[in-house]
Length: 175
Image (spheres, rainbow, N blue to C red):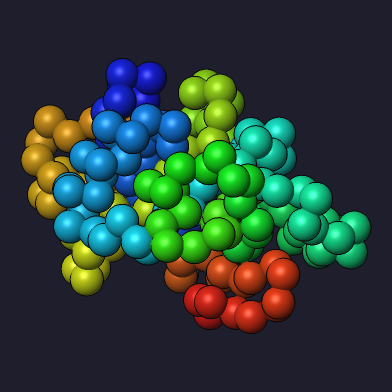
């Protein structure tokens, strides 16, 4: 489904997420429309390991100390805003020159990213401003009984991942 520009729902650390191939403008635009989300917000990319997000990150603008900070909490329930490479498309960064990235420790996400062969967009399974889906039944209620859904168990986290700007240390989203 992902390689054919479809959106899927899948379990994450704290809720069900919606995802698609971040390199497919068509899939991302479908996701924006489905969620009624503004393109300027950008998206989080989730991955099984660093090499799956490396091509989006301008590592020249990240110090060794900042890299160590990421390594201390990854894999885990922690998202960083990092400098984006210039070629990263607007549909991923939105109005920012950063990209939000997370290396997950959630088994379902790791399997999914490895099977897909790369990072995925990770956004809550809901319509913008509505409560996120916690169960697969809620996903099907929101998006229809035929919506592509990876059945599985969400993790034990109670909140979405903490988001920190790696460059200035500002906390964007608390947990």
